[in-house]
Amino acid sequence: MTRIQSPISTDGVLEELLTRFCPGHSDCTIVPIGHGNINDTYLVKTPAKKFILQRISATVFPKPLHVITNFQKIAAHLERRTGAIAPEWQFARSVLTDQGDLFFHDEKGDFWRGQTYLPHKVVTMLNSRHQGYELGRTLGIFHLLVSDMDGETLHDPLPGFHILPQYLEKFDCTRKKNSSMEEGSQYCQESIEKHRNKAAILERAKEDGILTMQPIHGDPKIDNFIFNELGCGVGLLDLDTVSLGLLHYDLGDCLRSCCNRSGEGGGVNREIHFDMEICKAILEGYFRQAGSLFSPSARSYIFDAVLLLAFELGLRFFTDHLMGDNYFKIVEPGENLQRAVIQFRLVEEIEKYEPEIRAAAEI
Image (cartoon, rainbow, N blue to C red; front, side):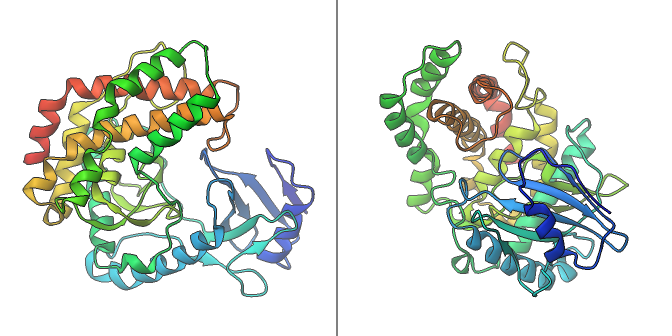
């Protein structure tokens, strides 16, 4: 008997998907898994196996097939590289349909794909220097694993992703059409104007050849890291945003998200705290593995990366709020505005630690 629990209207789609991805299994359970802001993700259980079934958001990813083919290239590369560098490394493989396809294209035009399920310890907050060190070490291993991959063969799944000046241009156009007098909006606009002149720092360094491009993960938040039962980092989930980019995008986003002890959601009036000890531990673990990828000049931009990635996310949340919440999922109206306020308050908090972050990046 098939049992389906879904927060979305499926109109029979999930039933059809199960006949495609696990034919012959009448005893099947499918339940939502994870709390991602973008795709719809399910865990499918049959007597024979568990696997992940995911609908790729065409609203976010303009060409879902690029995401699917990128995954195959990345998985094949990791298959070749992990044995020599990180034999314990875990990564998902594709689960094919009954026709041997990488995806199923439903009548609504949505693309669905299956991936192997990776059992892992779920960590939502770093509570020790050891955890921070392991997380940084894991990100460093990933960067090493993909450092020799020909990034030009990868499709760009999100054109303009992390290009902060482009997000500013989008915000400026949106603000002209959608003014907001809600509580918090004025604060967001003031924060944007205060930091506007810093937006191009990383892009200018890239143009000047100080910072160079290589494949990066694109979304190294804490719940995308795989930890084993001993608390050691052994992999990264969610390879949908892997593409050519600056290592600073990943490292900055990782520090922004993992050192924010308050998280990205919840009320806007609570205290925002950037944990400098966790920041030091992440950088220590990261550079122990991937220090060879950073020149001294490149290290000098790590503080800018942490600050600007927090600013970028605040800008994106606020712009999405003004545009009607088309990108990031929300549960209640105004949620993206609250998220934006939290990120801009985090920017202020990060600024207080500029000397310490710059010193930690130079060790």
